[in-house]
Image (cartoon, rainbow, N blue to C red; front, side, top):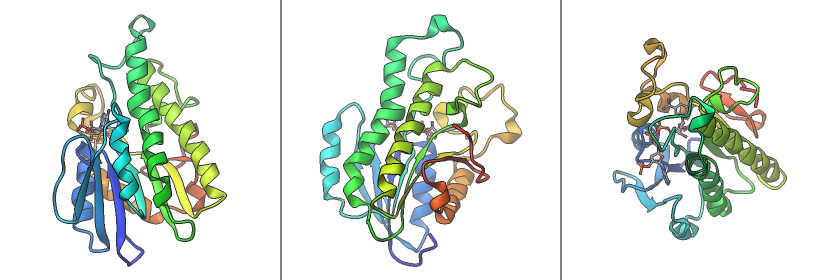
Amino acid sequence: MKQGRSMKVAIAGASGGIGGALLRLCQNDSSIETIYALSRQPVSGAKVQYFKIDYDDLSTFEHLSTIESIDALVIATGALTSISGPEKRIEQVGLEELSSLYRINAMGPILLTKALHHAFSKHKRSVCIALSAKVGSISDNYLGGWYSYRASKAALNMLFRSYAIEVSRTSKCIVSLYHPGTVATERFSLFQQHMDQSKIKTPEDVATALLQHINQMTEAHRGKLFDYTNQVIPF
Ligand SMILES: NC(=O)c1ccc[n+]([C@@H]2O[C@H](COP(=O)([O-])OP(=O)(O)OC[C@H]3O[C@@H](n4cnc5c(N)ncnc54)[C@H](OP(=O)(O)O)[C@@H]3O)[C@@H](O)[C@H]2O)c1
């Protein structure tokens, strides 16, 4: 990271494809002193302090109160589906999948952020960035389908927009959202076969772009969704 001092970075979803690649990248970044790895599965390594988090068990957030300060929180948790695949037709839309994806993609991330709110300094720059998705843009939805995933990411965008505005009144923390592009991670790649394979990125490339993005974030990024080319995606 560019600040040239000892940074503390928290990565939620450090056991996942993008989160794991980001964790490995941060381990090799000499400006990062501590990595708080927040995930369901244990993660270990140099500079890593592991904290179990599970959006289905909010009591796991209680021990996050021991984290005193964070320079960057990256929320790389999420799920595309918890059934056989994203819904294509209205007949496939059900309460269980809607609830499940809202919990994983929207409610979990904002409640996790709430549990770490105390760790953002009021006086120095910090970053809170959640991985969203272009398909969560309501105005960009020309194809339909993927009801639960799209809606849960739209909800995530709204929750972090509100948080960004609130935080801007009292702190220098920049709260933002990020679309990483299409990434060949284990669970998401099952649904990428029909896509142009040349446009699919590796988690390592995405982690590098994401870390650069975090370094370059300014006040202009507050409360907005940006893609990996630093272009705003309208909500
Ligand atoms: N891959 C893509 O093409 C793509 C495109 C656009 C946006 N994104 C977004 O990028 C983010 C990361 O995606 P990814 O491809 O790295 O996914 P991934 O490999 O499936 O990783 C997802 C992470 O979320 C965690 N997670 C899932 N459910 C959870 C729960 N209930 N409580 C706590 N943690 C939970 C997983 O933990 P476990 O390992 O314990 O399950 C894992 O660490 C997601 O928000 C996704 O929507 C991805």
